[in-house]
Length: 222
Picture 1: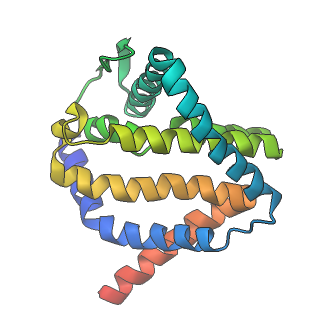
Picture 2: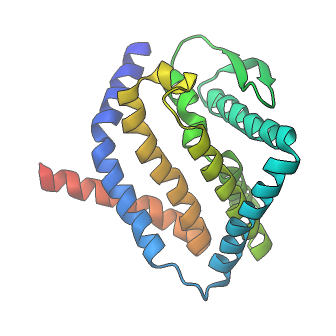
C-alpha cells in the first residue's frame, strides 16, 4: 500500500504543471467573468471585505482569543484531512501563542504529506459551507456573505502561517511543498469561486472544464 501511495504521489507531482494550467485557466475565466451587478458576487464581496475591519479589531482587542481561533481552525484541518486517510485523532493541543499539535494514529504513514499541508491550501470553513449549501440547497445571499468572510479568513491566516520555518512544511520538504500548494490552492479556491458564480451548475462546470483543459494541454504536448 505504501509503495502504491508513493507511486501515486510521484504521478501527481509530475501532473502538477498540467493541473495548474487546467484548473488555473478555468479559475481565471471565472474571475474575469465576475459581474459587480450580480447579487451573488455582491454578497460574497461584502462578506469578504467585512473580514478586514473585523480582523483589525479582533487582532488588537481580543488578541489571544483571535489567535486561538486561528490555531484551532489550523489543527482541525489536520484532523479532517487525516480522517480521509483513516487517521484517528488521539489528542489535539491548541494554544493562543504557542501554536498547536494534533496526534493521530493509523495503520500506515499514507497521507502524511496531505495531512501536513492541508491547512495551507484547504479552506475548511469555506468548503464546509459549500458542502452544506449543496446538500441543503441553500441559496440566500447571507450564506454567500458568510462564504466570502470565511474565504478571506483562510486566505489571510494562510498567508500569515505559510513559511518554510513551519514544522509542517519542513516535514514535507521544499520541493513537494512548492509543487503541491499552488495547484491545490487553485483547485480549492476555484471550487469556492465557481460555486459563488453559478451555484451547483458552476461547480460542476468548473470541474469538468478544468479536466478537459488538463487533457487538452497534455495531448498537445504529447
